[in-house]
Image (tube, rainbow, N blue to C red):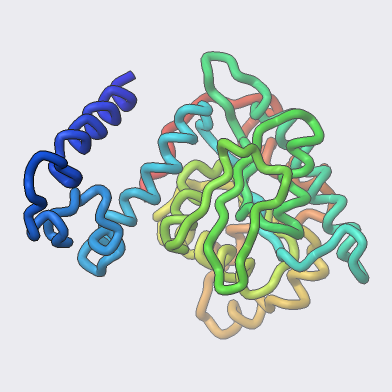
Length: 280
């Protein structure tokens, strides 16, 4: 493979570098930071000047893996990391429905169909616990792959055990993580959540109302929760959004309702035709 050959050639060049020459005196310059190979100089790679390169690396590393697995499209599930299967109030129901949706979407949407090496509507989450775990777990229940786009946090996040290992990624930049979450999405299902979920929801709504993303279904799970925490009528009354903006999403109260909304939009509950990732 070209990548393997390139790696071998790169390592061969290292072997020729006179860093440990035994037959000649080691030049003082060979210990200088400037003499390090750029690709192996961590101080250089982590410098401010290389931020753009790090963005590119975070994009391309995930992109290569997704292509290798034939992931043409995803269904993204957002929701609180704090929701537990045995938590208080509505939490057990939310977890159960997210798990059920993950299984339903994976089995009916094309994640299991590998015809021509293409997978459709693969479940994608932020990779953590709570609702994310539940959706990934549902995919695992039916033997389907699923994606976890993890992020480094001050209080370390670890990936849940249900994401496919080869599709479990770790990002430093929220912007690049969000881009990967959005660019292949056929649909979004947003379960109850807090600040992080609100951030993800409103970013996607803004992309939709500005025409920066395709016309994909956005489903808010549990009408009672969302109508309690977001007063769209107040925004309409104040004139800060219009009727078209308020119609960018719909509600669902069961996993079946959420899948019905998505499959109706896609035109069929069966696997759909491949499309190129959205250009964001």
